Length: 234
Image (cartoon, rainbow, N blue to C red):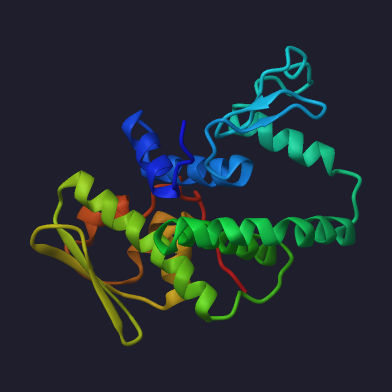
C-alpha cells in the first residue's frame, strides 16, 4: 500500500462519513502517528499498525477509562496521566512535542492547519479568562484562528441554505455562504472569534452590530453549544 498525502487521507475520512472537522482531526493524527504510511508498524512494547497506529495488543483496553476511542474517555486519560505534573513539566513536554506538531501543520496546509491554531487559541483564551488575565493580542495568530471559524460559519450557512452573510472586521470583509445576502455584521476580531467559537451567549451574539435579518443567522453562528449566561473576557 502507498504512503498517502494529507489531502488523500482527508478525502478518505470525508468519504467514510466524517464531518470536515472530524476529517481534519483524523488526518492530523494519521500524519503524526504514521506520516501517511499505511503499512507502518511499531512492535516496541505495543503492536500498533497502520495510518493511525492502532494498538491491537489484546491488553491495550485494560484501563480505568473505558473505550479510549471516546473523546471524553481519552481526555480523562490524558488529564489523569498528567495530574501530578507541574506547569514547568507540562511546558517541557509541550516543547518536546511541538516540533512534530508544527511539521504536521505544515504538511496539512493552511486551511487544515488553521483549525488547530483556532482550537489552541480558543482554549488559551479560556484559560486566560479563568485566571482573570488579559485577552490574547490581536496578532497574526488571531487572524489565522479567525479564518478557521469563518470557514466553519460559511459551511454552516451553506448547509442551512438561508443565504449569505457579509462580515467586516477592521478593513477586511468577507461574504460567507451562497445566495443573496440576508444579514451583515461588523465586529471586532476577538469578539467575532469568541462568538464563532461558542464562547458568547445568544444574547451577546444578537447584541453585535448586525444589519438585516439577524434572527435568521444568529442560531447558526457557532457549531458549538453556547453558554447559558454571558461570558466577558478581560
